[in-house]
Length: 202
Image 1 (cartoon, one colour):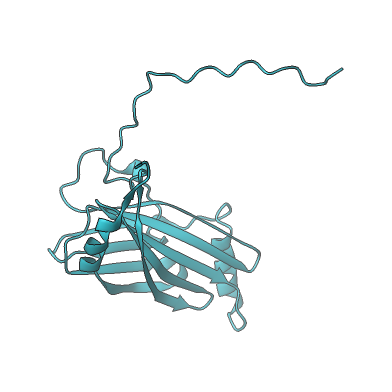
Image 2 (tube, rainbow, N blue to C red; image 1 turned 45 degrees about the vertical axis):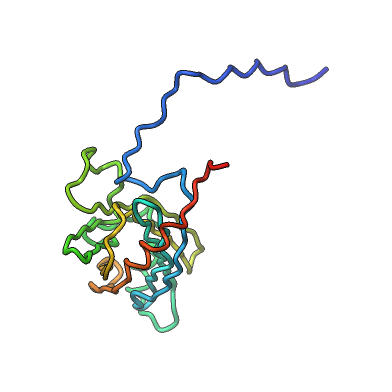
């Protein structure tokens, strides 16, 4: 005699479900294959931690900025610093105040600007179309062991930045990274946007 009884039939999918109400300033489109622009730059290196720009994924209507954050216990780092890093490596037990979280911002060639803290997410933003550029942390992830931790941060910048210089600003007070910036070429980003593909095209 079989232990498992037959499962009930799977109900037919509903025909009345409408597409989700997507607000393009809150997240990258899911139906586009972006062009990945490798822009590997070290933004900061402090005892036991480093912050890097990994790449920028270019979509037709915006760009996703991808950062990598590494932490680790290093020889020569004092006990207080080691404890601080271990606190960051175990976020369930400790969460620094928002002002000490990773913050990034952009200044565009037309003088407009936007900034965001990693403590905020798209869901907390307004539902109305922004009057200027919008920058939103949309996700990431991380993993590691007792002495090493790597995290990825993704930030969506909408709309596609104008041609010219785009300055990326960053600050991570919680681990001792002072405010800094790096200049990027938004003209190049606009040029490669023509290579974006439709995920569902025949």
